Image (cartoon, rainbow, N blue to C red):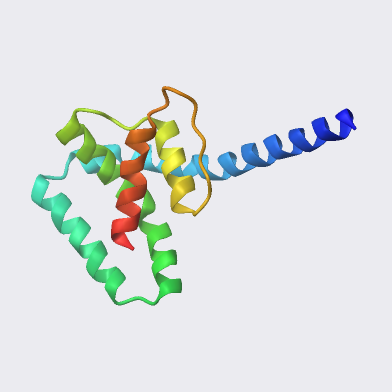
Length: 130
């Protein structure tokens, strides 16, 4: 009985790791866009966000989800840079991972000290765009 419980626990952990491995390339892409976001002026950031919002308005639900997934790396890079400029805090990669998990409608669990409040900003940006 104990062995079966341990096996099930191991499968659950492996499944979580596989999910994270699927998301990590998005974080790498977000990191690669950091200089792009830093190069934008405040009005450029506002214009970019408004462009995304306007494009979303013309799409049905299915197309909106696909579009949000397409713009996710740039949107998260923009949110990260806005946070640096306004709060003087830069989202860590683990916070981006958690925000992406929430964007996907899944549950994200973080340990104490991993910045749960900061990752809320990334997922909130996704909800605003929807």
